[in-house]
Amino acid sequence: MTIPITLITGFLGSGKTTLLNNLLRDPGMADTAVIINEFGDVAIDHLLVESAIENAVVLQGGCICCTVRGDLVDTLTDLTAKAARGELPPFSRIAIETTGLADPTAIAQIFATEPSLASQFTLRAVVTTVDAANAAGQLDQFDEARQQVALADVLILTKADLVEPDAVAALSERLRRINPGAEIVPVLHGAISPADLFDRAPEAPSGSGEGALRWLKAEAFDGSRAHHHHGDGHSHHDDAIKAFAVTLDTPIESAALRQWLNAVLSLRGKDLLRMKGIVNVRGAAGPLVVHAVQAIVHPPVRLAAWPSADHSTRIVFITRNISQAALQRSLDLLAQGGAS
Image 1 (cartoon, rainbow, N blue to C red):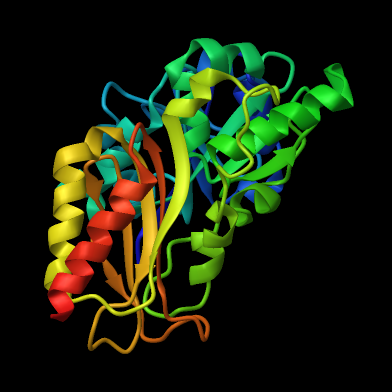
Image 2: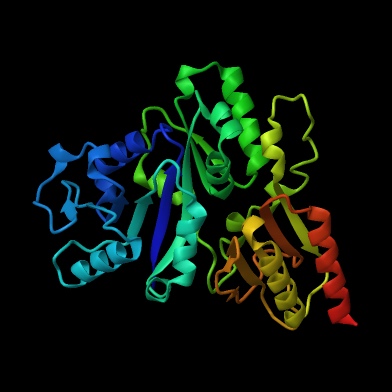
């Protein structure tokens, strides 16, 4: 059983610290370890009930809070070792706060490529805070802001009370164009419960088909660019990021699927922000779950059964300058070749 990881990211000033301060005061965080960049950014001094054990402190609600000690791998290894020795309370999940200019893909890749972590931890979700008052300009100017939105499973919309409703609606529509599969959650003053936050992002399915459709959210990507018109308030900076789904109605040979995935990841992995899907592999009773961040693919998982009567292959992509038509055409050709 692996420990689920939630990344909390967001551009400078977008409300991550306020969100964390509220979460850390909630008793619902008792089984959570929180890794932050600097204690100084999070006002937790009045909550401490034990002195620090090296870089970790225990809060009133039982939550463990620590700083990144040079290397994230070292910090995670240190936390789990101390919990195993009884030096820290046990925890069942971890939240990691990134810096405002961080590329969350770099952290996401660690959990798929670092052998010492892959067997212990699973990246469950990326949560991105978005400042309703300043996000439009940030998305125009900074690749990091757009990438943080594109990678998100949940978008926490902050400071909506400071701007007009029409501006909030326009920003929400822009966020949906960049990332149709992310849930947008308006939050005032960081007030959201741990259960509400962590439960909004479904885990990647493992073993059974239950939850697969909720995790995939393929319907959100159907025609997601069809209403994309110039002059509707969106920025041309967003055009490089495309969100779409490719589909197959017939099963594909496993060798053809591997060939296609390897080609996409090796040739365009740098521009593949995220991919996830369920695939109908010929001869299998249930679908294969695939999930990748840039060129790093997570180990595929075979489900025992399909989650619905629809057995079509559905793979959703969030990419930078990759053509949906080209990906669909290449998958069609390999599937036809494998069937011949």
